[in-house]
Image (cartoon, rainbow, N blue to C red):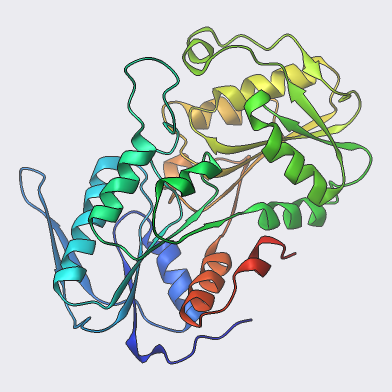
Length: 325
C-alpha cells in the first residue's frame, strides 16, 4: 500500500454527490476531509464557502456528475472557482463518474458534443488535472489539454468474478452490442474466457421504445455462464434484453456488470425481475436505499482512487493501477 508523503499541504474536499465514497477515500489516505459549506438559495443558485485556508495547497475535489447532474456539475465548477480565488496552488478534480460522456460525437445532424462541452468548462475553470473512472468512450481524454488519469474498474470486477469461481472454460464474456466489443475483449482477456456479441441493431431510442429481444447472438453461449459487460446501466432495459437473448440461446446463468449504476426510471424493477443472477456495479455513483435491490452487488472504488491520489501527490507512476489484481 502506497503511503502519502508530506501531507501537510494536501486538502481533500467532498461535495454533495457522493460523500460516503469521499469519506472512505479520506480514511484510507489518513487525511480528514476539509471543511466547506455548500448552500442553495431559494431559487436554486449555489453558494460555496471554503471554511479553512487552502493558500498554496494541493487540493483534490471529489465529485461525481451524477443525478442531479446539472446541480452536481455546477457545484463542482463553483467549488473550483472558489479554490482558485482562495489561492490554491493546484486543483485536481476526482470525478468517479463523468456525466454527459455519452454524447461524445455527433451521431446525427444538429447534435451537441456534451462530453467536450464539460471538458471545456473544466478547463476554463482552470483545473490542473482530472481523475476519472471508465469513461463511456476513452477518446474523451483527448478533449482535454491537461493531464487526465483514466482509471479502470476492471480489476475490481475480475477479483469478484474469480472469488465467485465464475472464471474458466464454461464462462463467456458478452458485449451487449457491437460498440461494446473492445470492453468485452479486455475483460475476457483478464479472466481468460471467450467472448460473444449480442447482435443488437436497434439504436438506443428505438430500443427503449420497442424493448425487442435481439434476434441473434454471435458466439457460443449454450450451457455457459454469461457475463454481460457494459460501462453504464441506466434504465436497465438493454441489460434485461441482453439477458433475455442469452437465455433464449441457451446460456445457463447470466450476470451483469457495469461500472456506473445510474439506475434511472424503472431500472430497479427491470433488473430485479430480469434473467440476471446478479447485477454487479461500483459505488462511483451514490445509490439511495430505494435504488438498492436483492440482485445488486456494489463494489467500492475507494482503494483505487486512494492509490491514484497518493501516487499523483508523490509523483509516482499510476501504471500499476491498470494491471493490479
